[in-house]
Amino acid sequence: MPSDQPLLSLRVVFLRQFLRHGRSIMTSPADVANPLLFFFMVITLFPLGLGPDPTTLAALSPGILWVVALLASLMVSAKLFASDFEDGSLEQLALAPYPLAVTALAEISAQWLATGFLLALLSPLFGVMLGLPDEGLLTLSVSLLLGTVCLTLIGALGSALTVSIRRGGLLLSLLIIPLNVPVLIFGTTAVREAVLGGNPESWLALLGGLALGSLVVAPLAIGAALRVSLDS
Amino acid sequence: MWTFIHKLGSPPWFFGFSGTLVRWLLPVTVTLLLVGAVWGLLVAPPDFRQGNSYRIIYIHVPAAVVALAGYYVMAFAGAVSLIWRIKMADVTMRAAAPVGAVLTAIALVTGAIWGKPTWGAWWVWDARITSMLILLFLYLGVVALFEAYENKTAAARACAVLSLVGMVNIPIIYKSVDWWYSLHQPASIKFTGESAIDSSMLYPLLLMILAFYCLFALTLLLNMRAELLWNHRDSGWLKQLVGDI
Image 1 (tube, rainbow over the protein chains, first blue to last red):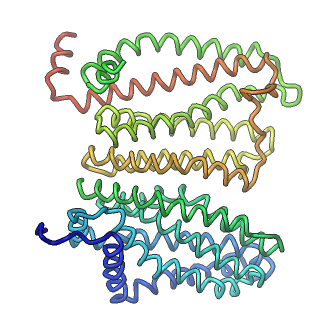
Image 2 (cartoon, each protein chain N blue to C red; image 1 turned 45 degrees about the vertical axis):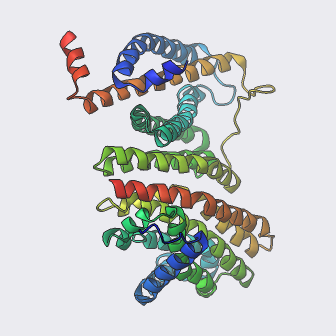
Image 3 (cartoon, each protein chain N blue to C red; image 1 turned 180 degrees about the vertical axis):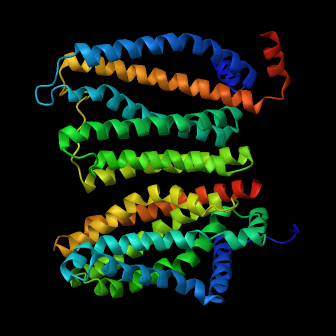
């Protein structure tokens, strides 16, 4: 990089990287639709496997919806950094005079907007399909909104650690499923609490805390992990 | 003090030092294990309600305690390796992961064996059991990640990042699983206040915990020595050492 060019502020860097990745997501709508379709398909499997009894389904639905959201995030994070790694743009980002944590976070934010955020918005629809009582629908959506932030960040960490490994898919699930346990517990408990007529706010607050905490910690770890992957 | 820590980073020096350490630690560990096992399994009185089946705690509890401590050893070594790039820290982390995984598995299996006569089921989804299971996954993740990388320096750094993130997460996982559901009895040994366990049962248990710490240190050192032998199989100091023997 020529030295007479002034450095950009981190905010501009974040914004540019966000828009760049956002545009690349827009060019392949299938990548946005796939996780949602996956979510829809797996949800369909549960009534087929468990039987169509509405009370059983309603009782199990908070857990089902959350577990399937977790699986969808696994699927998304498996290829989060893959194309950037293969075409060399990740290397360029690492050479750029900006922290990799910031540029990676911009990319992850764009990704979250296209997957986790949409999933959270559409989740009440799937909740209705499984007979989740109306009281739980808003909580489901809010809990997924906060929870997918954590799921995406943790998934991105797993992706950053395994991106240089051939056939890293199964390894990725082993790495990130244990880290996702608290998110799953807080999320499902919040929804169940709302269905039972209790107050889900404390659980949602915990989820929000987790989301903010991982927003601080995860990008640093992701940056370090990406550098390891590029060195190997 | 500082020179000692600096020396620890040198593979030839560590190899010699750990050899001496192992020679002392081996008899101590065996003695502690034997005394603790005989005391706990034969001498200590049977439990009022559980009869003799409770005696498995002399394996179960030490394994669980040391398995958790092992994760912190691994994560600490990972932090040292990330910050100061000391090769010996990589070796320590690499050696600690399988030992910790085995101890976690022992704790899970002995817990299941004890659970069958006591709770009537091999496996129940109780908070502590589930957190131990997750700990096992965390250990296996580190082991598998290390194996997956061809370049072992990169592998060590990746594992260091992973184990540090895991360490941040462990308290959260424990707390969340605790709130989720608890059937397991609360911890009986407390450092402050009265223990809920009689001293005739407590002392052999404490002895066994000490024995398992020694066992962990011993297997860790042996593992590290094996790793060093392999990593330095072509280097001069090792050939000289082997030549001397």
